[in-house]
Length: 310
Image (cartoon, rainbow, N blue to C red; front, side, top):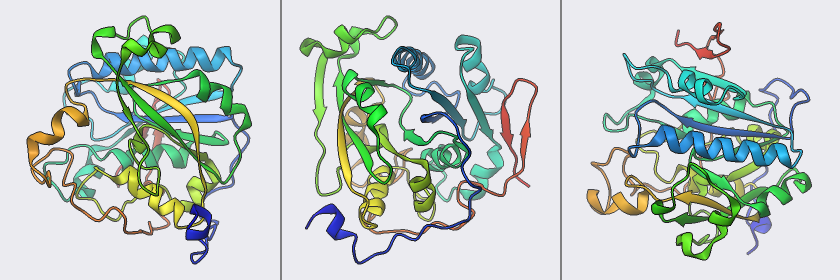
C-alpha cells in the first residue's frame, strides 16, 4: 500500500484555528535547546552549524529565517537565546518559554527538556512558506540546498543523516570535509514505512500543512524519544506523501543516541529522554491550543520574545 493510499481512509481536515499566514521568507528553520551544554559542546556545535547553513543559504539566494526556541531555561544561567546573538548577530528570531510551562506539562521528572513541544512553539510562530524542524548540529548538503527552490506544498520532505567522525572538528567546516568518504562514520538509512529513522534531524513541510496537522504529539508527554517518528505516522495516515531530498550531516558526539541508548536498558525508562517502549505508531490529535497558542508574549528590548505562563 502506498503512502497516499494509506491515508485515504482518514481525511485531512484543515482548521481555521490559526491566523492566516502573511508573506515571509521561503524557509523557516526551527531549532530548540537551552544553556545546559548538552554533549559537552552543545553551544559551539549549534553556532558552527547555524553559521555554515546561514552562509550557504544566503549564497544560494534562499530567503530564510533561523528561529531558536529555548525551553525550560536553567535558573541562574544566561539564556542561550542571548548568547546566540553575541556570536551570531544576524540570528533572526529568538523565543524563550517560561519554565513554568515545563513544570505544568511534564509528567516525567527525568525529562527536563520537551524538545517537540518547543519545536511546535517555533512552527506555529514561523513566517516562512516552508518550515524545517531540525536539530542544532545539522549541516545542510549541496543536494538539499539545490532542492529548496523546487519545494511543493503538501509533501513531507526527509533527508538521510550521515554521522561524521568527531575528530574532523567543525569550526572551519567546508563541503569538501562533509563530503569526504573518510569523514563518514555511519549512515542512518530511512526505515520502515514511514521514513522515520533520524526524523528529528530533518522534517521539512510547508507551514500551512504543519499547522493543519497541529505539529508534533502533545498528548503523550512522558518521553521525547520517537516523537519525530510519530509525526511521520501522523502525516502519512492523513495522506501526506514523503519525498527524500538528499543528505544532511551530523557530527558524532558523546551524547549522540547511538552512543548512549545502551546505557538505560531496553525500555529506557530511567533515561533523561524518557521511555522508548511507547506505541509511537499510534495516531494523535492535538488540541486547537497546541504550541502554547494562548500564552501571553512579551517582546523584550533585545528583540527576544518571552512566552509567559499565566
